[in-house]
Length: 276
Image (tube, rainbow, N blue to C red):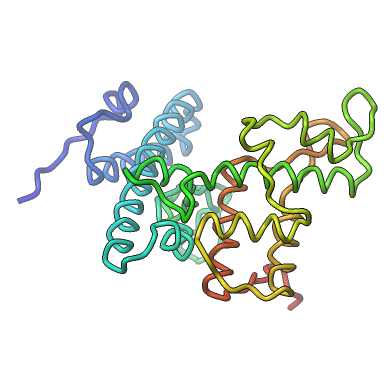
C-alpha cells in the first residue's frame, strides 16, 4: 500500500528538495506547489508567489536530473542488448521526457478564456548532452573516446567561418580572420592543433565518424549536414552588432542530431506559421 505524504507549504519552501526524495515524492510536491501557486496568484500574494516559484524551479531541476539519468540507463541497456555503441543509441534517441510548468489562460465554464492565468504541469523534453553521457558511463561513448576534442575544434572552425562570412572584426577593431579566431578561441591545445580536414564538410565528416564510427554519407547529404551546423551555430551576442557561437552543450546536441540524420536518413522538418 502506498504511503500517503502530508505536504506542508512551509516545509517545502524551507527545503524544496531533500536527498531522500523519490521521483514520486517530487511529483507530488510539484502538483502541490502548482496548486498553491494558483491560489496565491488569485489573491495577489506576491511574496508567496515568488517563494513558490523558486521552490518549483528546484523541484523541476531535480525531476529533470532523474529523467536524464533514467534516459542514460535506458541508453546503456539498449546499447548492450543490441551490441551497439551508446553514442549511436543516443543519436537515435536525442531527447527524453521531463515535467515542465506553463502559465496559460484560464478557461471558464463557458469555454472562453478568463482574465487570469493559471499554472499547469505539462510534459516537456530534455536534450541529451553526449558529453554528459560520456562522463556518466564507465567506458565512455563514441567510436573515438576523445571525440569531444574533435567536436571542440569543429565548434571553433564553424565560428571562424561565420565570422569571416559576416566580415566581423575583433573587439579591438582588427579583422576576425580564421587564423586569429582559431589561435585565440578558448579551448584546450589538443583541440586547437587537431587537424580535422581542409574543408568544412571534411571536418564535419571526421567529427561524425569519431562519434558514431564509419557511416556512408553521400556528398550532397554531407553538404546539407554541414550547412545545418553552420547556419545554426552563431547568433547575436549581448551587445549591438555582435555575434557569438552557440553554447557548448547546444552545439554537442546539434552534432548528435547530425549523427542521427547520418544514421537514419531523417530530414529537418520546417516549422512555421502557415496561413489559414
